[in-house]
Amino acid sequence: MAAPLLAACGGTSPTGAPRPPAVRSAPPADLVPDGYDGLLRTRALVLESGHLGPELCLGGVQESFPPQCGGPALPGWDWGAQPGGSYESAGGTTWGDYEVTGRLEGGAFVVERAVPAPPSTADPLGDAEDPFASPCPEPEGGWRPTDASRADEAALQRAVARAEESEHLGGVWLDQLLPVQADEPGAEPSPGSPQQLVLNVSTTGDPAALEAALREEWGGPLCVSRAQRTRAELYALQDELTGRHGALSSSVTEAAGQVELTVPVAFASLQEELDATHGEGVVRLLGVLRPAR
Image 1: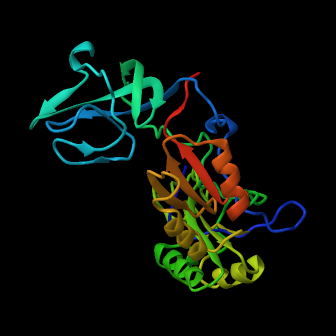
Image 2 (image 1 turned 180 degrees about the vertical axis):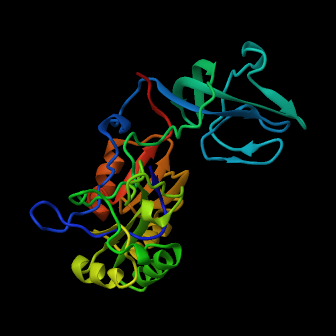
């Protein structure tokens, strides 16, 4: 279990070389070949307001009541054909959460099948792997503080501030250890203790030098890894890509050293173009509409 905040940890591979952060490249199954004419599927809100016909909400939903959103039109959508209780209405707006399968035709999505989406808290674009796991190998004996007297919240904040002073900073995040490893037999570390956290920091500079500087502040578990881009470069790239390539949204994942670009359909040719322009794995496409299998 991990937490996406604060700083990164320093570590080396079994050969002694600094380990780069794990790159979460889009799985091949997520990329759609150009010319694909098969069915696409997604889970999304279907919404119809008084002045607009039914739409498939691909670009995010405003948390108002009733909700608001935008997306491709759904020609032929019939609320009466949906099971009772799968949608609700208020203020002239009707909406419901559905798993839909169909085809993109111009600016519309022609539905061939729709079923009410089951309750779920899972991210439909999420990874099976933990994106915030520490990239450093686990030390012999497990992740433990080197100096418990400097492994409290204040020390953690000082270390994070120290890391953020570096112009070479790639990212800062926390990896929470489960189960908690107690220093004494029978001891019960309190939930949320900083000693349960691996402080992760990535850098485009010298990992060993940064680790030595952070150790002046932080005595808890620490992993310092090498980054491909600085944090500043990642956020500048996110700004550059905002609104381009039909993007619905964008975000930066410092732990992976990536800009994630959410688009209606993640075409393989666009991913190849982004890899060639910005470096392989630096920009990751996430398609909301994926091939139905």
